Length: 88
Image 1 (cartoon, rainbow, N blue to C red):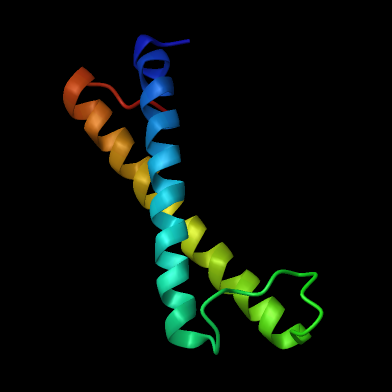
Image 2 (image 1 turned 30 degrees about the vertical axis):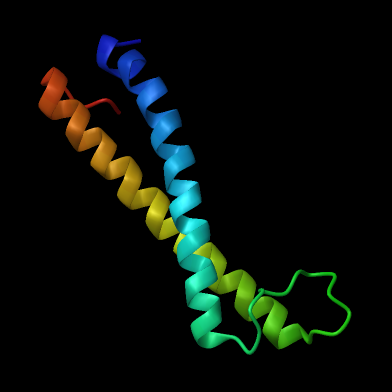
């Protein structure tokens, strides 16, 4: 395993945690805007319909995927600037 890849592991873990927190906050804000309630429905919410549950899941998945990709890409670019090699 290359040194840049090893050096990137703890950075990637930290960025992943921060990205997860950011994605969660973005999803909460997005759901307040598009949903009818403060909290997004869980799959087991008896009072919520299929459409609302599936819409929440799709929006949450899209936000988490986009934030994950942006954070990982940014971390890789920063690692290349510091070490001179791409971590992947």
